[in-house]
Length: 291
Ligand SMILES: CSC[C@H]1O[C@H](OP(=O)(O)O)[C@H](O)[C@@H]1O
Ligand SMILES: Nc1ncnc2[nH]cnc12
Image (tube, rainbow, N blue to C red; front, side, top):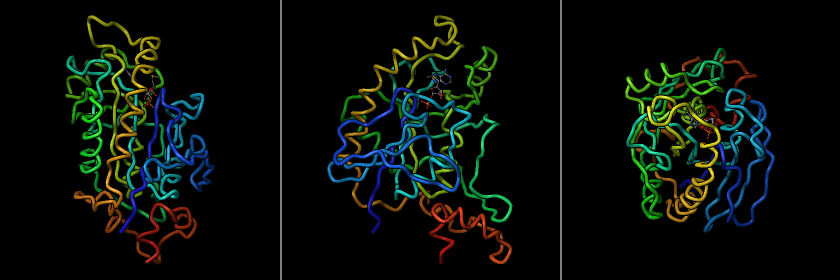
């Protein structure tokens, strides 16, 4: 049996998780770089929780400068089996109004200035990503949202842009024409790396604005975003607390194989693998490399 360990990555406006018992900010060293901050490790109803503020406390780190590999590696080293990302997003659909929590199930990755894989020359791996979120974890998040009476929508495509500037009108219209639902700057490559690390991933996208396409709302306004962020924080924290109370204590086998993604993914022959890269992969790929 694998004990469930819940990881939470908090985005803009979410820099702590109140209510954790026996909690301590914990430094986690990673061979991949520097995680965004120390990880707040504690318990809620007996469940181990690891909370990491994606931009660091004080919102120091811009989206393109986040060391996503170090963040996911740190979560893996702490034993995280299930990772919930909480993020601020713009809405690309009229009906997804500010305050709505979208339980994202697809992504379009338009980022271009980030390291996107733990693997590469010396240890090549190709994981499946057709379904980037883990359905049982999304079920648990949805149940928590329902229990807390939080307005939410299950399913939606998150367009990940590089930023840090918000999108131009023509881009916003383009993404709408592609059928995207929300737009943000951080869920990629986070979700891809979680899959490579065999961590189940779900994304809660909190709508703060209508991006730039909406004729009645004009350009994105950071002041309005920050106000909505403040209003969303309480809901986000209640959602995580409810999730922590109800998520199964034994990590269930993921029906789409998120937690066994590396089973057949590494294709570099054992004698052609780079020992230095293998050493860095000790946490992320330890399950398959050690046997
Ligand atoms: C504060 S608005 C723009 C900023 O907010 C989102 O961050 P996160 O996804 O970490 O909540 C968005 O992606 C931008 O980084
Ligand atoms: N409109 C928007 N575009 C990108 N990231 C966002 N985060 C919050 N609102 C956003």
